[in-house]
Length: 461
Ligand SMILES: Cc1ncc(COP(=O)(O)O)c(C=O)c1O
Image (cartoon, rainbow, N blue to C red; front, side, top):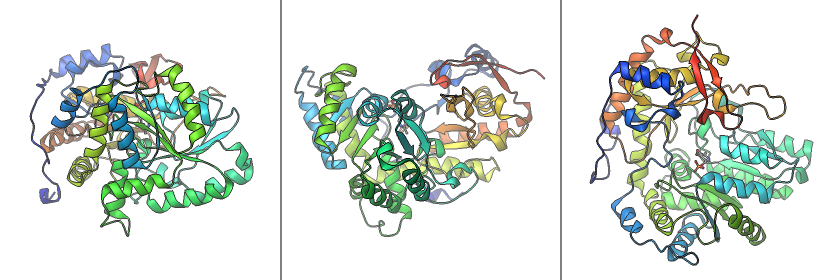
């Protein structure tokens, strides 16, 4: 690999947190006690934590300074005004409803925009998003292009919506039975895959003909914008800010988890164009989150988010971010480790089907792989496969997603390339004795979002 292709960190490290590595014997004990679920491991027992990029970001000195300027008034906080102005400037949305994190916004949007029995097409599901859609009577329909379900296929903009699927759904069910289109930029569970500007524009044109609204999941929209600048013709000379603004010009609003591209540790929002929907959202936010001028956030957290959103648009920042993730992916690929291709924006996804061909999907290969990677290396990752997909709300059967993956998610501005080398070494070393990975069975299966708290045991054969 030519390191000249990978930019050095565009920041100085001002504050550090010491980590320690416990030995393999202790890690074996820890994972057993955690029921083979990496969510249940204590952070202190983790060496490199790639569980998630959510809320695990390092804030800048300016954001920390922003915390000190928190206006914690119950109503009319000046930080709300700053966040409102920032959201208008970055995304072009005039109406803002702050929430405690992304799922708070998903809850409110689902309640105001879905009538029971309506369909909610989306480019692959996300766990909390689909939960709120279904809990409010919506019927989720996956309209991502088929290629996104093929882990080994290396094509650009793999997160695109299949317009024919959308058109067919509108024809079959009638526009009035479609609540809205939910378009995620990027698509987390497909491997952090981006959506092209051309696709967003086409979705807008098609839905406008039928009077259907489009709401984006904006969680990783800046990462998506980088891919557009890098790979879509006509955008090479545009700024990340210009690209983000154009992306959202094709939508009616968005839910956002600020914990990702907002580069903060907590927070999120619902942003809307429509005045009536905004009024409906404000009526609900007071029930579920708080006063409309703080929702679920402290004044100081709104300030940090406003600053973080602006920082995320800096080209040097986002270029380093995407290329650091790609560096890890390329290292693994070079060693023959099967990963989801192309490498997406926030994570490298190991393809557990090809990593553990000796395990049946009902033996939870990705869950087992994540548990074994922790024992091998002290690196914490996350299952994104059959366990995360949960059960069909009607039949009670397991959803069986084609993608059975382990996500190595890179927090923003936290780790260096050398950390990525250590992660790669751990994965490669495990790959060399992958046959030792045993399948798992549930000993405790929660009814909702089971991946967070489920417990397993190894299947002895
Ligand atoms: C694509 C996507 N949408 C929504 C969410 C929900 O956001 P939050 O964790 O802030 O509730 C997440 C992260 O968990 C996500 O990755």
